[in-house]
Image (cartoon, rainbow, N blue to C red; front, side):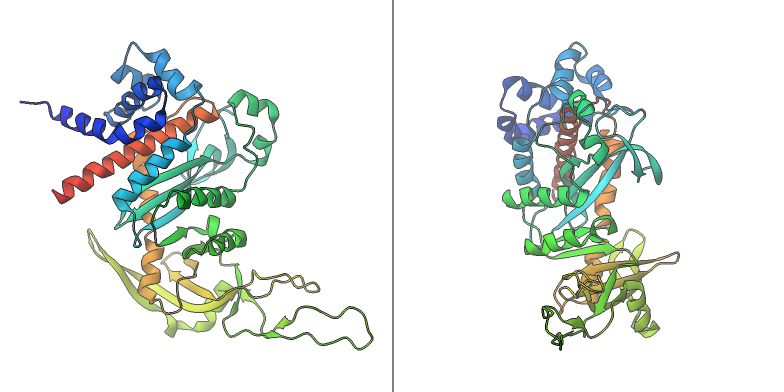
Length: 400
């Protein structure tokens, strides 16, 4: 009788075939499947040394060079990976989820480590922060990208950059810009999805929302309660000509004042709040209390005198009333969209957080102990391949 472990390892070999050409060099093609087996096998630690002990005890130097020291480009592998993910869960009903995940670290020498908010610990702490893109459909997520965020202090420190091997082309970019750049790569790879989802860390940025709209993408994103917007009924009043000459004003003024999204929801009154069930969970229907109204965010051109922004394009404003707090969202889904459809999009984002947790617990995404830029991204892309393989196995088992 065959060892059950042989079956999944043979399936892993088949899964790796499309990736191997992208690895190009024969040495990398040899060690990539070995490292993937090390990530997938049981073990408390998934850093290089424990992996070597499990799968190749006599090859520590070679595997360390493959992952941590060499400078192979991940993008050809990520292009193949995008195709595999698209085959697994892509489609018009899929979501592209933008988020970030923190990797707690001790010391200050690992690439990108800084004292910043660490979601894994729920507070400010020493950590690395990876901007992530996730493709998900029917609650099944697969990772498309992880990109390290370098704060301005790190990005401008030539000595630390040199020690960590940061490529010269990498400069400081805010997280929302990293996300847009990665979305462009996903679009170039023709990954299919219906909309983009993000939390308030990205959605509160007007440039991010504008970037999504410029790319003609549908989006549903979180915003802070202090985000300002105008009622959808607002109109721009033409400017009055000046009586005594001078340069005439070029922009009108809004017919109504902007206010916080919290205030706009409050003005709707309690009758606007509705209970919505978005799907059935393992313990029964999942439902909550929501209100929704059309608004125009205050992210249009800036008015020269008052310094306020004019109204932008009309979108949905949604409030979610939780027992401990109220969450706010903006969405450019069509005006004809139902509240349930918009809420379903909001709630689809949770699968990304679940995926991050599983990748850390099962594959050691946060276990890499090297200090280099390339090493961290090599480990991350191999974790992505391993997780997508697990989803492939789970989906095939589900449909067999």
